[in-house]
Image (tube, rainbow, N blue to C red; front, side, top):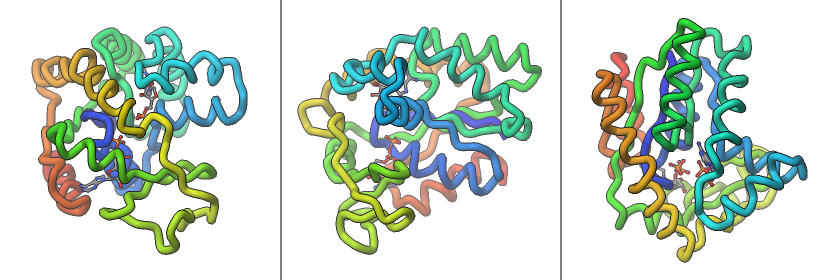
Length: 214
Ligand code: ADP
Ligand code: AMP
């Protein structure tokens, strides 16, 4: 199963990608997580990506496309993968299409998690991310057992810099300008599966599985 998660920032792509990956026993590949790990590790890629991310802008296509192409060609992706946060632009989608055609293993579904902008703002304000393992919580909708501490690895939970209200609006604008056109891109190819992302996490997951033919 090769799946892409589409949706606005904060729509629940990461939350659902983890569940889909577990269900099909395939890797969850988040380009945002890859960049954050590179920033933490002080790599050249991390240094290049940081200023774009902090501003709520997209990292340039040329820094993302090869990275994903290399990642999905790895052995552990032989049975599929869930791409979370990629593609985010038409050139990225075209690059992915070219590389998957070359691999002889095209994407099966683009799952579009549909959430209106009003709901996104409260989702992002309440999101907390673990500085250690990157796990994501929500102060109201998915709180950790102990406030401010990750259930999985015990490290501290923080509000991501790019989840601060001033950056969220920029990210939403970027989403509407550059990423939303991908909905039509995948609809034209008969791969689009849109789900109602305003429902509970369990309900959204159930709808995704239904659309994936479970
Ligand atoms: P994305 O990966 O699309 O940016 P996340 O999966 O990190 O989004 O979700 C954003 C925030 O909203 C997180 O704090 C998450 O716990 C919460 N969230 C995700 N799905 C739902 C849902 N169906 N209902 C309420 N809150 C949700
Ligand atoms: P995310 O964790 O998916 O919300 O991504 C956080 C940030 O990483 C985004 O706001 C972008 O700055 C950057 N990023 C992640 N994935 C991509 C991508 N496919 N293309 C460009 N920038 C990306």
